[in-house]
Length: 133
Image (cartoon, rainbow, N blue to C red):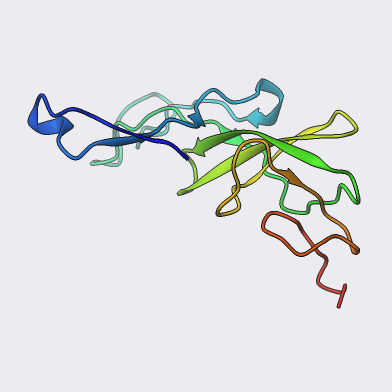
């Protein structure tokens, strides 16, 4: 992945780096949740729990942990940051037209193909069932 280093112009931009391959806008049908003003407030909106304010609006991404698309190849289209977990996620376009998010396998780049099943090669990003031994 390409890393963009900033030219220092203020103390806050010193030692700053951004991964230029990471996209930030998620697919609308793969996110859910509504922004409710929790933040320590009751039903009337009155602050009842102190020191619980601020934060940014976060929507949940539907992550495919099961990887049950058997023997269908998928291609990594985007790599995005998930604000609800300290990890990156990948958008996968499968051969049958389905789109899903998975956790980003370390070392995978945009354009790699992945597959899950019992007879798949052992490489980064592929998923084997636990009983395939």
